Length: 113
Length: 118
Image (cartoon, rainbow over all chains, first blue to last red; front, side, top):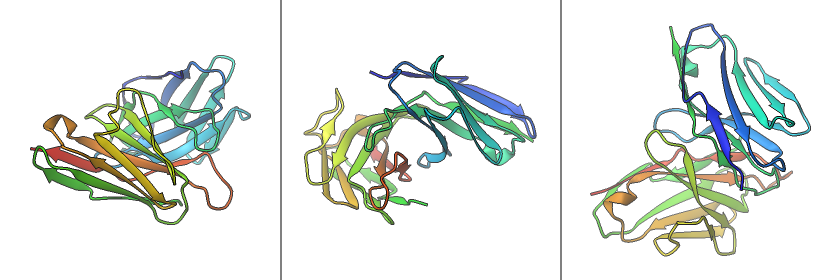
């Protein structure tokens, strides 16, 4: 089955700097890769996703890149703000409607002001 | 955006009792919902896939007789923790796929339910 590894487990950056979180997956058939932000005591919130027919996707300060050959994808947050502090999870799935997600272990992002 | 609610947000129960958690998709229909369990500072662990009108599919190691799932309508799935014990204390989160309009791959999560068994 699919296995998703996520690094780093914790990341501290200064406000205004960029943050990068990386994930690798094992199943070459996976073709849908979402990123979730989870704040303390809350459910995960979808912040951006990418499908395997696209190499990069950007939404304001957030971008995701995908390298299918290497089977890894990354989340990039630019101009970080204190409110970006949270736990971020990557996930992978076969992308079929109703298909289950396999999550990475999570990254605790701390943005210091 | 798609909204998923859970009720209750927090529940404390005594050991041996049963607890029901509701998951509702408020502004879309969801043929498929998922139930996750999350331990402190850990990732989400999929417990089961809930399909409207049919039996839930449980992940390996999850006791189906202990975690009863019912998906009676396109907007409601329930998880009942039967004969709860302290080790069942956890954060339970549901998610749903939108089926109304164009089906999408996006999975929307509820806010979670904190269960504490004393």
